[in-house]
Each structure stands twice: as C-alpha cells, then as structure tokens.
Image (cartoon, rainbow, N blue to C red):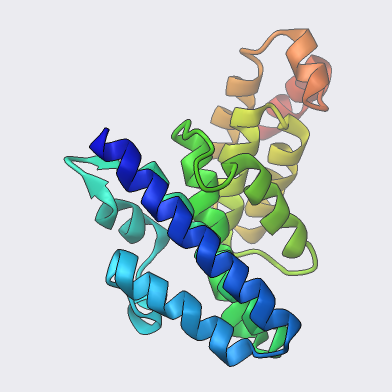
Length: 212
C-alpha cells in the first residue's frame, strides 16, 4: 500500500509539472518551465542540473536503487524530466546541452526496457523509440550505439542491431570477438523470428564466415 501511494504521488507530481511546462512553453516562458523541472528534480531526487550533468546513466541507476534493485518508477520519472528539459533547451537554441540530456534520457529508457520494467510514468520502449527518432540526424556516441544494439536485439529488431554493430566496427570500438558473439546469438533464433527481425539465416552465416 505504501509503495503504491508513493508511486501515485510521484506520478501526480510529474503530471502537474508536465502540465505546467506545457502551458509555459505555449506562452514562450521557457525559463520558468526549466525552473519548474529543476524544482521537481531537487524535490524528488535531490539533484540539481549541475550534478545531474556530471552523473552517467549508470550512476543514476545505481543511485536510484534500493538494496541493488533499481526503482523503476523513479527512473522513469527522471527520464521523462530529462526529455522535457532537452526539448526546452533545444527550443532555446542550446543544442549541445539538449543533446546530452536527450542521450541520458534515451539511455535510461533503454536500460529500463532491458530490465523488463513495466510502464509507470512512461512506456520505456515507446520513449526510447521517440528519443532515437529525435536523434536521427546526429552521430551517436559509441556507448549509445552499443546500448541501442543490445536494446534492439532484445526487442527482436535484428536488422537495426546489426546496423549499429556495423557502425561500431567501423568506429573501431568493438572488442575482439564481440561481433562474432553477436551473430552467434542471432543464429540461435528460429528462422521465423529472424525474418521478423529483418535478417535471414543465410545472411547471418555469410557475415559470420567473413567475421571469423
């Protein structure tokens, strides 16, 4: 009961802030909208923007965990707030800052999906797709590509995962055997699942032969 009440209060606070931010954006009062997000970050997470920017998504997951168990509700709320702040900063022309926050939001949503988190404040898979679309015109950092490849592989988007693994290979950041292990994992799937994911067994075997 306590856990449910805690989650409901947090979602209610997020809804109030999201509504306020939307209204302020329409009135072009972006500074006040950013302040509303900042206040909720400090109230809910004891985080200010400077500290938030200094922590990696892995740090945030560790910080918002209890006895080693990530708090999915808090992480989703945080990821939503980061997304909202990124949108505001982009409208203000602060593209670099917006990019960094959007990447962090994307990472959190993908990690939540990989954890099997249910939608509480937002649907992790839908939000991850939304952030990837928003970042489509940017060159993603290698760690983002690697995490996105894992996420796509888990979701059965094998063609998308393969594209990212190819980019990582081109970037020269894959560890020895990492690409081979990826193709061997895919080959464990049946033909129907591979086809649904945009690849064929013959294609995978051909690439694997070239890889080893």
